[in-house]
Image (cartoon, rainbow, N blue to C red; front, side, top):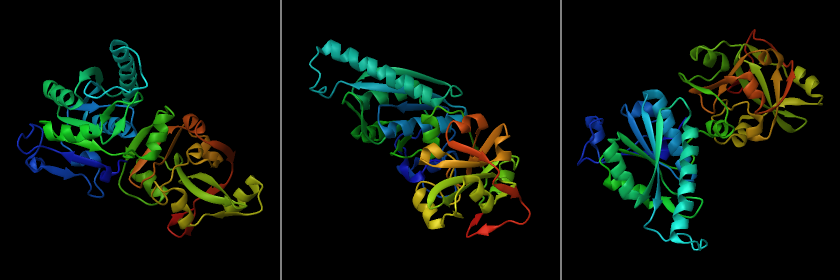
Length: 350
């Protein structure tokens, strides 16, 4: 889920766009109200223009566009501008024509990578432009009749040319349509990890819940497929224990299965420190992401699909179990018992 504090929606009151509501005619508005999904705060954009470069904010801008387009069916247009207003990096001593060709290759690679990041399910196109980035982005948005421009806050391309930085401010000041300015780390780190691993997954938004069983129910997922993730300490070493929502973790079984002298739950303070980007109790069972071994309860490994919290209490991630196994150092063991009476440890149901 997007961190709303990292996204600003800016529109020009002097030139209200046809897709903006009256409330959106304010000069600036930040999407920061807790509890609302990103798309609920945005108008139903049909044409989304994204300016891309090599930076992390640019990747976040592409991911935001993909999330919006998936919800609205919008078309995404990706552009990269070769900036001719700046001196090219002095390390390149080639002729101007050779330099330009080098930047063209770089730009095409960036656009192709961004389109791949969007995914095949998103209708998209891309184009490489040459000129003043601010002027080219604004003109392209006007010519294409874009409903919104999505742009990162800063960043430099691999060859040293500045695309996004003061450019974002200039686009905000000059554009006729709303501009979404995306800061670094706007993408949920769990989704970023899965995208970087080229894993096929589905996001399931749902009502905020704090137990695995209730989350499975509100997500319309069988409890046997929903993974409950717990941080445990095995002889003082951290690991993840994963059981289905309809079972509870048995620490004695885990101790014997792991071959350790002591198995206990980590404290909520330890969990918060270990997963700083996740809400407590909503961490995913992704061993490679956190450098942890994962102990998976045997019944869960028999499921075709696995669903788990994606770092927040209002979104779940679904993927095939086979894909999940590629993302963790998993050990399949019997560490759970059927739920009879929930066992509580602080705010966590085990």
